[in-house]
Image 1 (cartoon, rainbow, N blue to C red):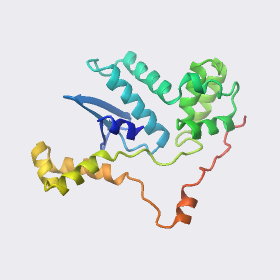
Image 2: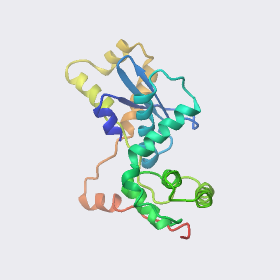
Image 3: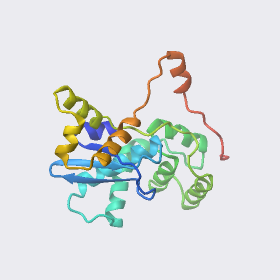
Image 4: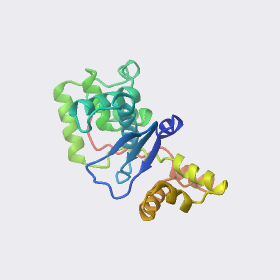
Length: 222
């Protein structure tokens, strides 16, 4: 999802020291869309949904006032349909609270259990009582959710752009000076972006062991 945003011209930035109450926000700077994310919650499923949520804002809410519950719900619905299309996922959703089935759907669709439970309720697969029981159990369990999908999606466009500039004789210091940003802030933002890149294992066997099928803990009875 992050690559999709970057492929369509959006600059995705991960900002340090953001409030935990803010998952992400976006803004049009002229003709360039910017997406700012909170790296504190290192969760792949959540980072994908946050990216899709901000994509919804960028395509639907160019001039809307921020913070409106209406536009937030619209962006949420956009993300849910984009990542879990109703025409495809409805037939796969369980008709009762089946955590093993939901674990499988989490791995397949790359979305959180909470998002799947919400989607199942919105599409009529879960009744109100089932939905409330599932959300209560997830809330009691807390974060991280069972069936971890790994670290959050990391942006690459900023680092590639800086490297390209350096190859053409424009240093990072030159870029910061031209931007007018305080050097400490620019350096901290860039460091946050580059530190989130996944590290490749040198040994193939180690990579296989470390990045194999995520362990699923059966914490909730079916």
